[in-house]
Amino acid sequence: MEKVIFYTKEICSLCDDAEALLEMFQQDYEFEIEKRDIYTNDEWLEEFQLLIPVVEVKGIQLDCEHVDFFTMEKTLKEHLPTRKK
Image (cartoon, rainbow, N blue to C red; front, side):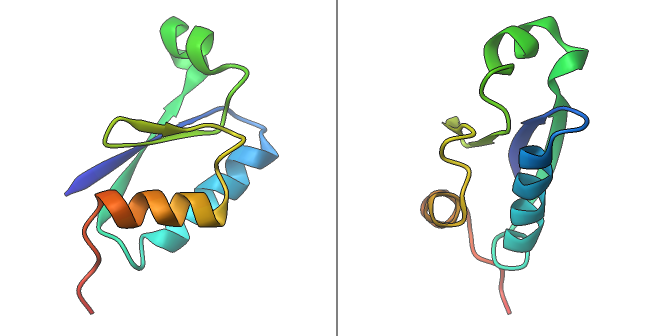
């Protein structure tokens, strides 16, 4: 199964909203969410501290300015298989 990497941190309302969107899209697309707290890895903290939440789909990163319903749906649709109903 495909993996979507979700860079996040505790106490982040934007991250909470992004996670809710990802969970909603799991109904239509086949993927699992790998959550990564940026405070557990110095490289992630340095790279993403001003950009979180960041959603990565097959190497394509959507940062906080692009983590919205339409952009996320377009990215998932282009890169992930749809769930069979």
